[in-house]
Image (cartoon, rainbow, N blue to C red; front, side):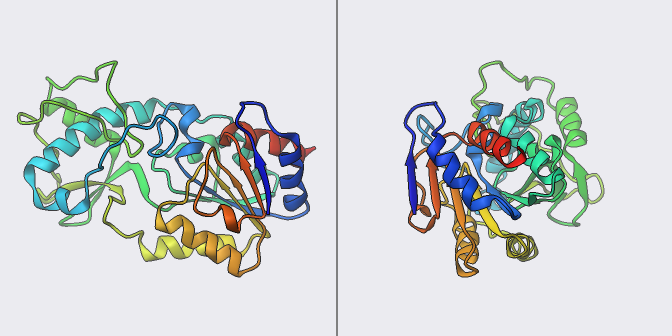
Amino acid sequence: MTMIAGSTPELDEQGLDAAYAVLRGGTFAVLTGAGVSTDSGIPDYRGAGAPKRTPMTVSQFLLNDASRRRYWAGSHLGWAMFDAARPNSGHRMLATLEDHGLVNGVVTQNVDGLHVRAGSKRVVDLHGSMDRVHCLDCGQTFARASIASRIDRENPWLSNPDAVTLNPDGDAEVARVDDFIPPVCSVCGGHLKPDVVFFGEFVPTDKFAEARDLIATADALVIAGSSLVVNSGIRLLEHARRNKLPIVIINRGATKGDSRATVKLDSGASETLAALAERLLD
C-alpha cells in the first residue's frame, strides 16, 4: 500500500500521482461518506471536532410516541438546512467523471441527496434519502417537501432558528417537543418515517446488491470521506478486494480499511476529488 499523509490543507502531488496511476485507463466505482458533504455545510459523525451524540435507534422510533415527536421535530428543522445545502466541488467532479465515462456510479452512505443534485445519474443511496417519507402501515410514499409543509401548518410555533445544531442524518437538537404534532399518513392515518436507515436497521438487501453489482462492473474502487466504521461500507470494500480491484481511499484520518487500500490519501475529500479529476480528464 502507498500511504500518503497530508496534515496540511495543501494537496500532496505524490499521492495524487499514485492514485492517478491506479485509476487511469479504466472505470471506477465510488463509495462516499459524510466527509464528502462537509464542504456543503453538513457535519460528519466522526471527523475532528464532531460532537459526541447517540442517534435515535429504530426501536426507539417505533415503540415510543415521545421519541417520534422528538425525532420529527428535530428532523423537520434539520431538513430545512439539508434542503438549503448545495453540492460542492467533490460532488460536481464525480458527476463530471461519470459524464466522461470514467465513473460508472456512486454508492453513498449519505442521505442528503447532493450527488443527484450535482448531476450524478447512477447513485445508490445505501442508507436512503431524506427527501422521501413512507408510511410504516400502508407503504405510501410522500415527497419530503409536502410533509414539511404540513408540519409547518400544524406546528406554527416551530421555527427554524439560525443557530440550530444540525446532525449528519438530518436530525437537529430541539428542546421543546411536548406540543409538537407529528405528521401522519394522509391515506391511512399511520405512522410516517423518513426513508432512511436508522441505527439498528439493516441496509435493504436489494439496495446492497445494487451497490455490490455496481462495484463488480468497475476496474477499481474509490472510497471518499468515509471512516468505514459502518458495516455496509467495509463489506463493499471487502467485495472489491476479493475481486482483486485496486482500492483508493481518500479520508482525513484513519479508516478501518487503510491496511487493505492500494493507495490511501489522508486529505479532504472534495479538494482531492477535484484535483484527481483534473488529472484524469487532462
